[in-house]
Image (cartoon, rainbow, N blue to C red; front, top):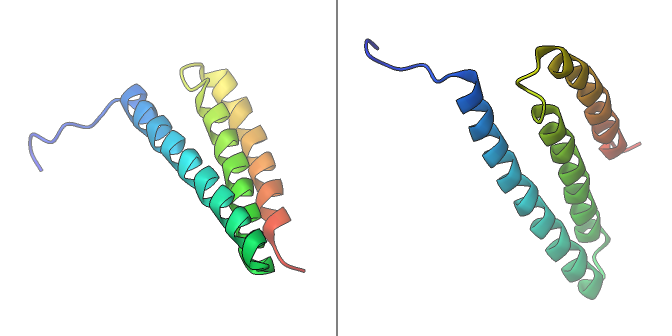
Length: 97
């Protein structure tokens, strides 16, 4: 592994943000299609799948917000704690009772 360059943190964060934007767009389209098709087909489970995709979009948005201050270590830590709490709320809202 000699000669393998380790990317710097800003480069990794930029890559992560691009991936998260892609994921948000994909989940939004997936949710929209599932809700529309599920509505026409009368499929509650398909509509539920679409709603779940929208919850994932919200969680992804929290992650983007967390990464928006990555260069500032103090704000990064504060956003990390807040994002963990918020993401936990979204994930727990998805669990079935």
